[in-house]
Length: 329
Image (cartoon, rainbow, N blue to C red; front, top):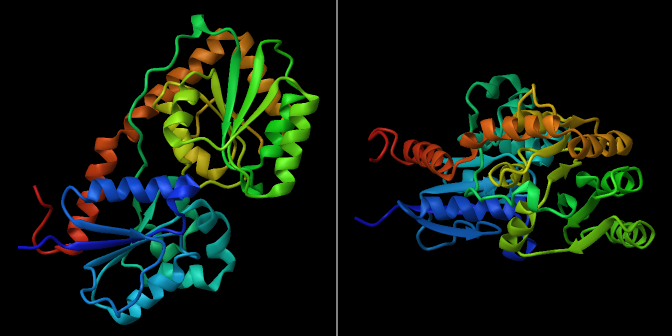
């Protein structure tokens, strides 16, 4: 019997190397152990000779045309919508296409539980939470470090707020601190700011875009990772830091709390460069505080194990495709 076919629609191409692409490619890899999977930026429509059995859409607004066409062409076939940060914290409140996607999808998936509060009340209870994952990496022992590198991993776009990271570089007091930014250019004015900051402040380095594997290897050698975003649905970079035993210094926003927990000690007010700088200094100057962050991140790491994400995803997809057969073994 031929394997059932799943079509994954994601707005990002492989070359983008962003969170959406990482999510789509990882899900495709997990699902291919049981199903036939096509990964594309859109669904081509009902003209295909053999329509898939399930459509998975990433991003309520940007994948809305594919999800709408799928729902109209095959109203009896299931669909799954994975909600991103811009979906939860902007688009579903103001964008009609994103709102329509919420209503059309058979199942909704969030990347962390705090996002439920942003959904319409009628949809909250039925939304599924599937944490993203990353293989564990062994971090470099702290005693062997000559510098205390604080990484920011994120493309130059306003939602990621790289300007707060750049401003923090001018305010950090610890002499050994270096602020290292990995990310490509999506908004040219921010690239100009990065270049100007690097020219004026030796402790700030902008490395530009890097391949995913190289980014993880660079991250694991860092003292900590700063996440300055104004909105996140469930940042993949948090998972990649935590699973490399690198503590996170995170903007205090709903999406980050959903990933790290309300009691996490490493938050700073979003957009507050001075507070981020003080937090960086504290991790360097107060070993007990730094160890507390490491311990808190280690306690969250089991949530982000690949086996846990794979099992949750396959259980949901199995139930959508074969609701009367139960979960496959």
